[in-house]
Length: 243
Image 1 (cartoon, rainbow, N blue to C red):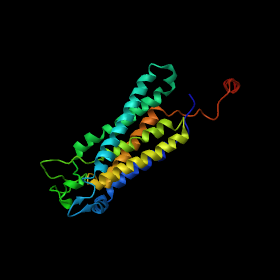
Image 2 (image 1 turned 90 degrees about the vertical axis):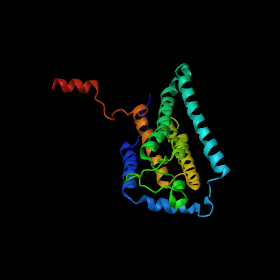
Image 3 (image 1 turned 120 degrees about the vertical axis):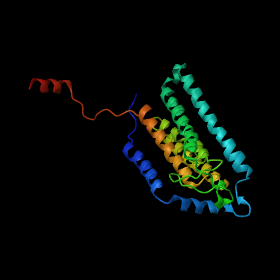
Image 4 (image 1 turned 180 degrees about the horizontal axis):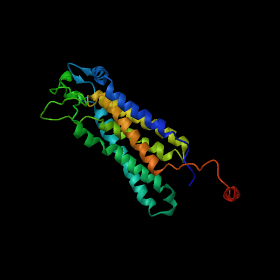
C-alpha cells in the first residue's frame, strides 16, 4: 500500500492538548455565563428550551442520522471481511467503526464522573442547583449533573473520523468532510446552548476529545510512513563491508 500523505502529528496533537490545559487554567465560567445569558430570558427561560426544531429535528433526528452512518460503517466493515472487492476499504472502515464508537462512547462515563450541572439546572438560570466548576468542590445534590462534556456535540464532531479515513485516498473529499464535521458539530453545539443544555466550554471539550481520539486511531490504524529518502544499494553495502 502507498505511504500516507505527510502529517505533522506533533503539531496537531500538541495544539489540542495545549487548548485543554488552557481551558483548565483560564476563567471559562465568565465566558460561559455571558454567552448563556444571550439565550436566556428571565421570564420565559432559555429561548430554545421548547423549540420543536431544536429538539425534534436538530437533536433527535440529526443524532439518528449520525447513528445510521455509524451502523453503515459497521455493515461496510463486515462486508469487507467477505467481499474481496471491498478488501481495500477494510482498514479505513474498521478505523471508522473504532473512532466513531470511541468518540461517542466516552461521553456518558465522563458525564457520570464529573457530575457537572446543565445551565438550565442552575439558580442563575431559573433552576435550583448551585454552580460548581469542573475541578472544584461539588456540593451534594439529589440529582447530580450529567452535562460535561457535550453529548450532542459529539454526534457532529465524531465525524472528524471521516477526514482521517479519507485523507490518504480522497484528499479533496477529506477536506470537505473536515469542514462538514466542524460545521455540524458547531451547529449541534449552538443548538444545545440555546436550549440551556450546555455551556460553550462543554462543547469545546467535546471537540478536543473527539479530535484526539480520531487522530490517535488514525496514527495507530491507518498512517503509513514513507520509505526513507536515501537507501543503501547492494554495491555500497559490499563496499562498506570490504573496507
